[in-house]
Length: 94
Image (tube, rainbow, N blue to C red; front, side, top):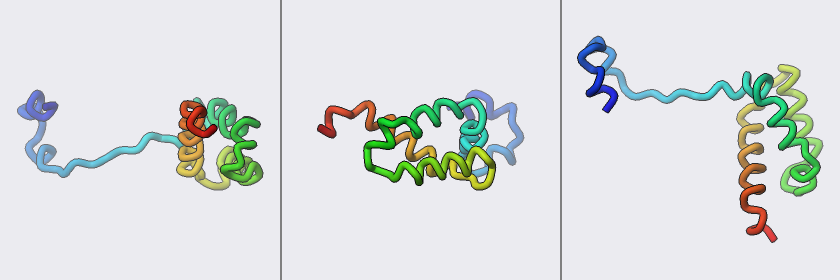
């Protein structure tokens, strides 16, 4: 739909390119704008006591990422989504 709307204004070579994805800059967001949100969720006693993952392991992942020693944003994102899912589906786990 977008290509039909603006296709006549774009170079034809651009229109021939295959679709490509893009990723959100999670690594930077977790060190910046989403830092508090991430830590409030993943380091919360509620999540750490769940027993799903080791509290020490989560703390280690967060610390390494925040210090810039390692890009752990992929794992941190998955844990954050897990925590948000658990919060929304708490009744299913009882």
